[in-house]
Image 1 (cartoon, rainbow, N blue to C red):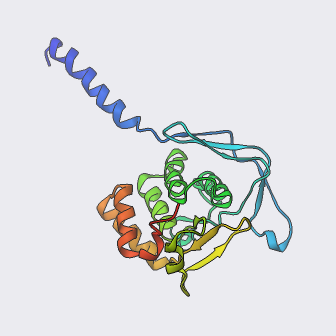
Image 2 (image 1 turned 30 degrees about the vertical axis):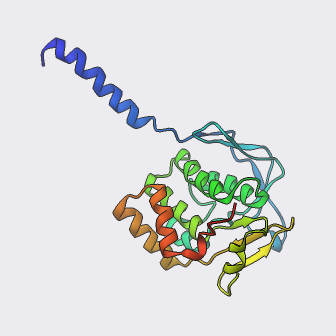
Length: 215
């Protein structure tokens, strides 16, 4: 390659490579420091001994404060046989953030589940696995609102629990099975969908999980 062309081409190649590798995923501040709680009623529950923070791609801080409790229960058990339990792999850091916000409900549930995807990517989980985890919580993860949305009353069925939390807010827990998760995994692995396409997949195949009018 002539020297003049090389001087032009190589920087372009480097720019493309850097662009591909610098997709913003956010980052964690600190490490998860916790202790197991005692008692049969606290199976798998841990108490955070220090603040743990995830900073998302837009720079927003998602804080799991010292004193928060976490047990990974916001990750549907149907996904555990495919991905692993909530404290068994790299996604435990994202699970802590997800747990805390599903408990406090200080942000819309759609945002909390979407941040779970980015936190998993920041923790080193592959794109495909992170999308499966995202789809799983979009199907079977908790959804909440203020109780004013008529959407909640129509979803209060025998298979979908709709209950008030300790602060009187409405929480819906749609069902999800291992078969549901395996079908989701096939969709992700075959189609490599965007997050928006996963949202559409959930809406088409699991309409009881969408709660379109809730926040």
